[in-house]
Amino acid sequence: MTIPTPPPARPSAPVTRSEGPGAAPDLEELERFRLAALNMMEDAAEARRRLEQANQDLARAVADNSRLVAAIEQGWDAVVITDTDANIEYVNSTFERVTGYSRKELIGKNPRILQSGKQDPGFYREMWDHLANGLPFFGRMVNKRKDGQLFIEDAAISPVKDAEGRIVNYVGVKRDITERLRMEEQLAHSQKMETVGRLAGGVAHDFNNMLGVILGNAELLKENLHVESPLHEEVDAIIGAARRSSDITRQLLAFARRQLVQPKILDLNEAVEGCLKLLGRLIGENVDLVWLPAAEPCRVKIDPVQIDQILTNLCVNARDAIHDVGTITIETSRTTCSRTVCSLHEGCVPGEYVVLSVSDTGEGMSSEVIAHAFEPFFSTKPVGEGTGLGLATVHGIVTQNGGFVVAESPPGSGAVFRVHLPAQERPENEPGQTAPVKEPVGGGQTVMIVEDEALLLKLGATMLRSLGYRVIAAEGPEAAIERMKAEPGKIDLLLTDVVMSGMNGRELAARIRADQPDIRVLYMSGYTADFIASRGVLEKDLHFISKPFNRHDLAVHIQRCLNSEASPGHADS
Image (cartoon, rainbow, N blue to C red; front, side, top):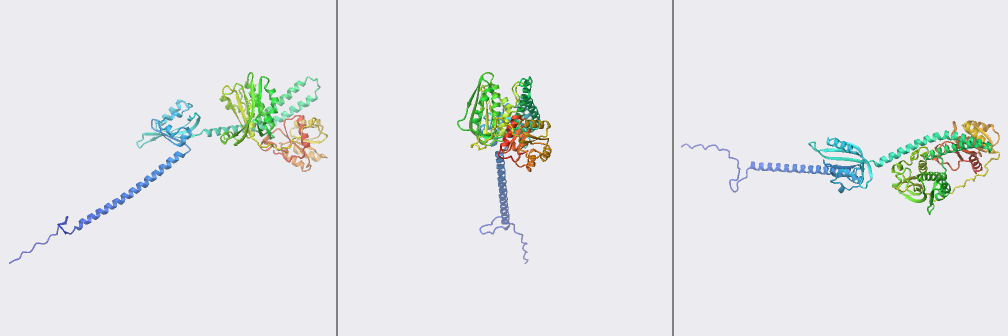
């Protein structure tokens, strides 16, 4: 019997599920589960990494945004953002500070609330033409703060576009330049004064020299005329014209801050009282002069002559503003000026000030006149009735002495000028000057006069001889040295010009003192103070006479110099 061969075994099919209790799991199925789990873990890890990166990017964006907001908020420029209808959506703190409006008051408003009316409609049409066409606009405008004060700003306004190029906002970046423009104007004014001062200084020397010749010779001519000579009137006219010309030069030098001064500490109350009689005659009988001194001392440091100039110019100005009858009031007081107040006036420092006020009941001044009142040659008087130097002179003198002057004119209440000078708490112990003798003539002393202008040299020598001095005349410093070597005996006084060609007066005095150490020196000059003394102040130990001078003035200065205890050491030139 044949036994059949069993068929070959077939591979078993993969197990997809348990065949029953206790059946073994399919390995391939487990592998698929394991791989799926690994993939899920990797996806989760990647998701965590992406989340961390997103968080970091967000943190950086927040930090960048915070820095941007802080920069905008704390920046010097004012920033404003509006929508397309020009309604304000955002302003920074600088915008609030400059305009005086709070953010709450501005949001939703139109920037036109800041308009001052100083720009015409064409200005704004041009601005919106630029912006509507997607172009930035740059311009300067005058706007008005919440309190009504005007300010000037430079503005850059730009359209903001979205990804599709549509305008969605406008952003304006503005800078308040009001203070900068004020300082630039102040600098320009100072430079103008400096230029005019240089011109005045250059002209003054030659002008004063010529005036000295005219005045001196006219006075000598008058002395030699017979009492009944018909030429007296003509000579007096020459002398008067020369003196008035000299006064104009002094006013030019005063407002240009180049006037030679000898300041000392004085009580302003006493100085004003000493001028009242003169001022009363000056303003006339139809104007009452009222004097209201402060109860306390008002000490300032200034040349007494400059007080006379200030009062004279202010009172004449007040008198001219009163057409019929009226009152001029002079008053002194003390005040404290803060840093804010002093910042408005060049060269002033915070502290105690003495105030000299001159007010009148005249017609007053408009704001336009006040703005130009202290400018040289500015005058509201008819042609020929004013030089325009009076108030400019006051301004120059006050500024030269570290103070400032302000003018006010309330409507219908006349005008008031307030001169502020730094207060001095202690009186200055200065040696008194030798009082001039009634007849200041010499007693045969030898005077060497050194002058490089031949006409002035001749005139000065004539004056000295008429005063009783023995005279050695030298035309220039080199000639003076030669004459000193040739002349036997002692020279009592050297009268020398300060600025000369080749050698100045100080150098000449030093050369002569090498041989004659006891010689007295009297300097003279028609130049301005900045040529002959440090910072426009005459040194206490230096004897000086300003040109032009007459014979009496020369006699008094020579007597003071000869009677001084010690000879001055030097002169700045």
